[in-house]
Image 1: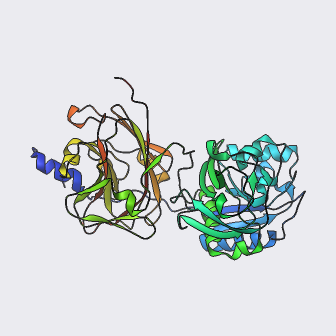
Image 2: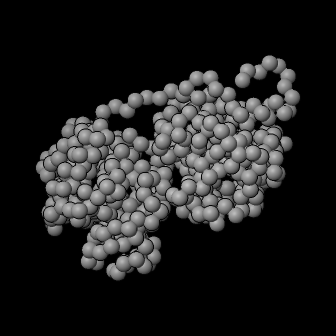
Image 3: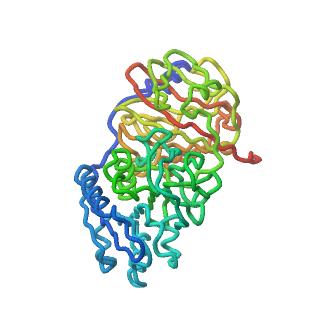
Amino acid sequence: MRSTGRLTTAVVGAALLLGCVTGPAVSHPAEAKRVLVFSKTAGFRHDSIPEGIAAVKQLGEGAGFAVDATEDAGAFTSANLRRYDAVVFLSTTGDVLDAAQQSAFEGYIRHGGGYVGIHAAADTEYDWAFYGGVAGAYFQNHPAIQPATVDVEDRAHPATSDLARAWDRTDEWYNYRSNPRERAHVLASLDESSYTGGTMHGDHPIAWCQNYQGGRAFYTGGGHTKESYSEPAFRQHLLGGIRWAIGDAQADCRPENGYRPLFDGTAGSLSGWKQAGPGSFTLDADGTLTSTGGMGLLWYATSGFSAYSLKLDWKTAGDDNSGVFVGFPPSDDPWAAVNNGYEIQIDATDVPDKTTGSVYGFQSADLKKRDRALNPPGEWNTYEIRVEGERLRLWLNGVKINDFTNTDPARSLRDGHLGIQNHGSGDQVSFRDIRIKELPVKGN
């Protein structure tokens, strides 16, 4: 929709809520990637290592990355490691690298390399502090192999996005010497009431990711048994972790603590929300809200917010339109949000200040950063919208892509409500896990 000069307030509002379609955002095909599987052991040796190597190779064939496997620590030279987008430590144990090899691996990570640790990778290199940091935690002990329930905490990361919120499986469940939650982003944790032998006092991470000293690091505590590597859900979990580590998928792997849910996937958590205008959202069995009809707004009516970090996960089915509104007054009219708040846009094909990551109609995202951080239709993305005073900052999958300051008193961000848009009958956008952390209110 092009401007023709003076527009009435209603027409301006319509333009803000509807969006305009002009041309597609730039996308770049992924380059071929290569992964090294390293399985040297200097302590206990898992008999599942051959199955693990075979599984990673099969996953690579299906996902388009090449896989080499070795137990030769001589592969850890700067020149050789540069050939690989990630190194998988597959149930390694004990001291497996000498000082020069450790130095080469540190340089590799610091120059953007990827690390994937599987199971006993946490039982490795106890005297090498850098390795302990990249792995996230060291092994303490374990009870007998038994069934347990895994609580999936992050349902946007590719390692966990296809899992149910409660994942029941059998494995050897490690206890760790420390809790990585303050340093890493926990993807899944163990329900210690579902099995015997857990010693982490009810907060028991079992899979996590982090951006570590320039590189990407993913760890999963699963994978002790041979059967793990033929289990479809575990294979998908492992594939997602590898894809993130090599940069074929994006996710927010910053530590996340102190948030409370506004919508957690259950029908009961919608009790504080209201639909304004036509259309609605459907609640799917997996706890996903999907837009239908429109044009309207599902807004959180229980309270407004002054200073906060809002996080939510979203995905589109294709070239679809939606957005997240913040800073508007309570109203059953969706135009109140349009005329008195700001929309953080979700729309792949529009002009820069009206496409994904923009403050709609006011400020474009950094498009180069946005394009590198954005997952394609069909895959989940995470927004963090941080409001402090009149400043609004936006992170996409952990990358800051917009920094906007409001100067319009009618749109003050200092106290307002938030909502998600159902744009129209042809737009299908899904949301999960809407959570908020309230921040200290700063003075003028």
